[in-house]
Length: 96
Image (cartoon, rainbow, N blue to C red; front, side, top):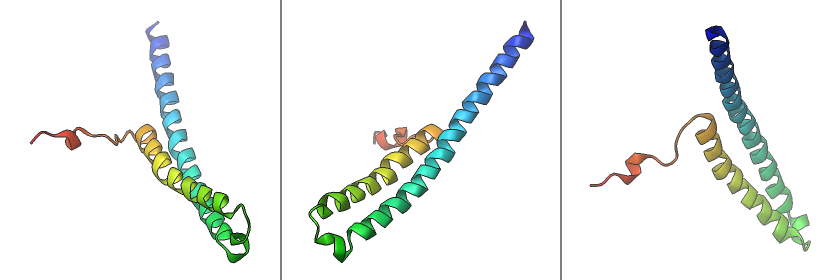
């Protein structure tokens, strides 16, 4: 019976580690591809040809907003969930 409990604990630990690895690597993949895609979109929509179109403002600024979303929101998610780095530390709230 102890052997079954030990195997269950090992399996839970393995699944937990796999979960964190997926968050780290898939998040990093999304981070790289998101930045590349948003930079290309901003370059294309910012060109002189697209500035004359009515949808330029929406598409260009949507790419800018997505760029900030990927760089701030996704990075904090990767750091907090994958690497267990807290963005809110006790050091920021130290009393003098």
